[in-house]
Image (cartoon, rainbow, N blue to C red):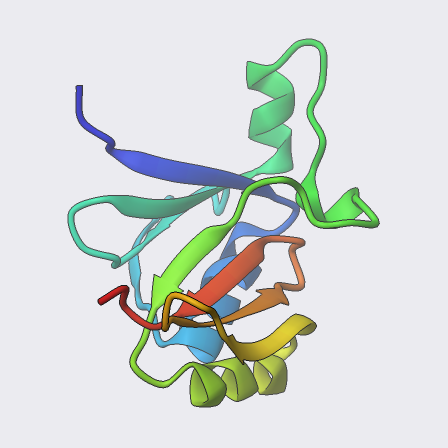
Amino acid sequence: MKFGYLIIYVPDVPASLQFFSSAFGLTTRFLHESGTYGELETGETALAFAADELAAMNFSSGHVSAHSSAKPLGIEVGLVTDDVPSAHAKALNAGATEITAPALKPWGQTVSYVRCPDGTLVELCTPIK
């Protein structure tokens, strides 16, 4: 078994790809011509977005879309950086909402949390040493 990708269902795939590019510097690897599926360049494991309409096709009993939830869902995307305060500020400038300001954790890691316009919860953190 190998972890291949994480798909986040969103209302506007191109907008989510653009936000992650502006806020975090990640480039688009692939965007389907329909605009309903796209992937970011994140290394071997892809971070992908699919349209809520595809979720409706895949899950007959429905799904909870992150953007429609008042609180962040119980899942996060973790992005590792050496400079959490700068990455955090850049994400806020791009339109993210602050959940938790950068803070030093007892184990020595600096961590912050932002929520993207599409509802995705992102942890920005330094590498664990």
